[in-house]
Length: 159
Image (cartoon, rainbow, N blue to C red; front, top):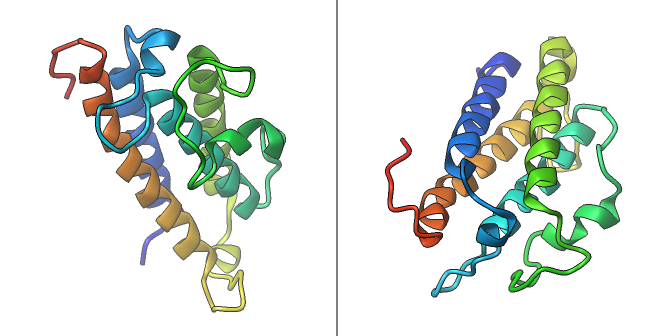
């Protein structure tokens, strides 16, 4: 079975990649829209923050930011094509992602087996299944950062 510690390692590795893929990237760089269907780095990072809020809530912790602050980054939201008041600046996204990761780690380190295996919805989904899915989902989007970094003209190999 997947343990809370295993899932925490997935989030930690994701953060390691996020830090490297965003190194040297400006807020303006993070808004560059790919020339194909997809979204900019800012949206991807904001979406990760949006989803980390769900991880925190599922662990019984407080969300870091009000829902309306991260609503811009919800599933199926419009692409970010320019800066606007509802777009979170890149340094703030990264700071909030790091803090959310710390809080998630604390929550995962302190969870007991009974809660980890508890059913959380009418479909019989267990807490560990939901959190593991959200970790997988984060990995999916973290992988997109490599191409979005190249879109900025970095032309390097980070990992």
